[in-house]
Image (cartoon, rainbow, N blue to C red):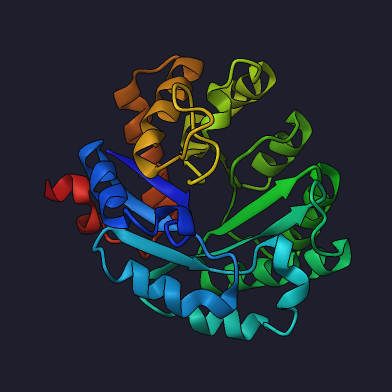
Amino acid sequence: MLVDHHCHLDFPQFAKDRDGVVARAARAGVGVLVTISTRVRQLPDLIALAERYPNVFCSVGTHPHYAHEELDVSVDEIVRLAEHPKVVAIGEAGLDYFYKRSPPEAQAEGFRRHIAAARITGLPLEIHTREADEDTARILEEEHAKGPFPAILHCFTGGRDLAMRALALGLTISFTGVITFRKSEELRAIAAEVPLDRLLVETDAPFLAPEPYRGKLNEPAYVVHTAEMLARVKGVTPQELAEATTENFFRLFKKVPRAASAADAA
């Protein structure tokens, strides 16, 4: 069994075939899906979506693109909203200096609030970081000094220094279909250094479809192709990679019951 811990099932690209997307994932052996929050204010819709499927869960958080819009969301509010049984993670939050749709100061403030919520709840923080390696590492180190927190560098495309500093803090690193792209040699080299017990796989669907679907609409079923590439990079079988990443998922996402897996139920 595999898990897609980071997708966006609420996005409009899936509106006409959401049931089909979830069903195809189950048939591909992807037993649990976590659909990720981008705005706290839209959490009721995300929870309603997750409640339609026994194997779909969600997070609560504000994407860095929208950090400036939700600076009124307190740590206490995030913690309170995370009490819902379908909410199993915090985020996604972090720093995005590629698009800069939100001021860096607002992104950093939101990032630190989400870290605090992860520390309080014990739920894993889904971290978005793009073109912001140094500031991301610095904030993680400063916040870790206040007390540990579970976290994942989602859709990792950063440099080796960020990866190693994150691993030193106990974080987990997750890879998307980007690792299957022909020109991702440096990323594959970094993945080769990440211990097997600190790896996750994801799609970030509907974006970043892996080969052989690159350029097309991505969906959770395609995480199989990312896992196959990671298995080759790590020198293990696809089954060993699946077992390791799934065990890593359940260790981090403690609120997700193993019995919720569609693959196990099939």
